[in-house]
Image (tube, rainbow, N blue to C red; front, side, top):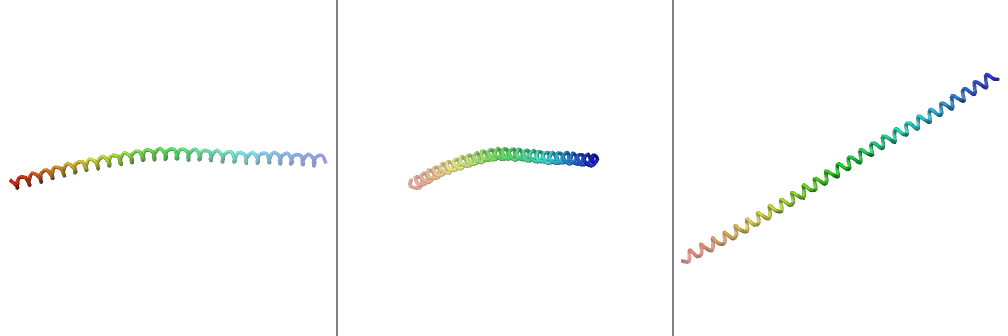
Length: 100
């Protein structure tokens, strides 16, 4: 009976130790998964921050291009206006020359 009790106690001890080891393995796996997910979350945050910074730079470039196009168009319109004035003055001078 002593051997049977001792054997049962040994098996029970192994089972308890086995359960604790299994529980610890599950806990370790959970921690590893959480750490991996935290790292992925950090990667996502870093990618979003970089994308936001790039979008801001692109927006500034686009605004600068729009401003440059506006200034170029205004300069062309001013040149066309001076050309029209010069053409009108030349036509007036031609008309005056023909009448004399």
